[in-house]
Amino acid sequence: MVYDLIIIGAGPAGMTAGVYAARKKLKTLILSQDIGGQATWSSDVENYLGFTMITGPDLVEKFEHHIEQFKDVLELRLVIKGVSEIRKEKTYFSVSIKDGKTEHARAVIIAGGKVPRPLGVVGEKEFLNRGVAYCSWCDGPLFAGKDVAIVGGGNSALDAALNIEKIVKSIVIINVTSELTGDAVMIDKVLASPHVRVINNSEVLSINGDQFVRSITIQDHKEKTPSNVDVAGVFVEVGSNPATGYLSKLIKLNKASEIVIDKYNMTSKKGIFAAGDITEIPEKQIITAAGEGAKAAICAAQYLTRLEKL
Image 1 (cartoon, one colour):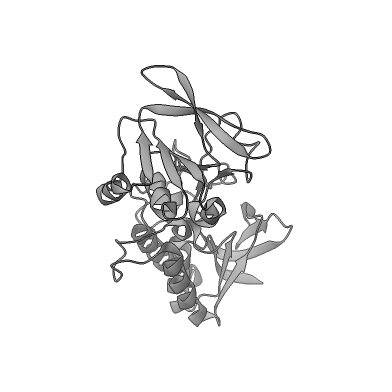
Image 2 (image 1 turned 120 degrees about the horizontal axis):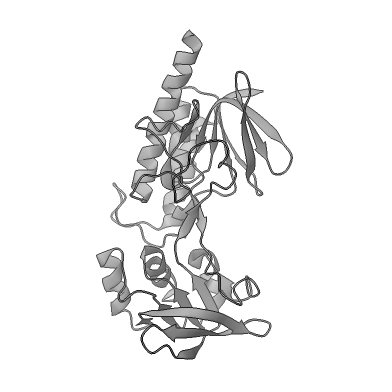
């Protein structure tokens, strides 16, 4: 079977693209490792039009209910291992899945978002799932009543702190810069929390423990003196990298490995579009990802219409 469109990713960009494609009656397949992407990890969303306050998971649930209305032309399939390759054939694209299956479509939208960026310190890999975590929403309840560290000082770190502050005993934020960065409202909330303390101008040298995490070793940039902080968990929140590892030989990427797109969301390969955080657009927000997903689907539909006329 050859679909009209395959969408890779089911975050805000991918699911919005799916809705717009379905409204154009395009036979569409969404392939994704999860539903919701990074939006699922957000604790409180206060800047998505129509909701003064909603959690990320609740917003994603509404997205999912919306796309269920289009089951006649829209299929959402979870592929746990992800996509391994996209190839251009004569009249369609082949999308290979890591489980060995291959699907085909006349056009593709890549909306795979980003994956967490590792710290790259001693102990990080060794204690993964034994105290080291990358998703506060997913793993926060595992540390109920315990002391934890969050590494990072941007929006992802702030959101993690707000997400788990009422669950854990205490939070220490290890921030490499001189002050927290990101959304001013979130910064105010974090600094006002009695459960959170912030250590600026410091970096994590190692994550330590036995069977589980017991402490981290940090170093102040001025004093250059290492010290240990006792914690039972470490949430790594130092940003993320675009999920483009399998695309470098197919389409043009920028220096940050983000997909380069034109104003029609077309990549350097005709017939392949991209949307959301995986692209070079500067603002990485849920609402902008959704808007880019809509644009990509509209432009993909127009592209397919032109193909039919040739």
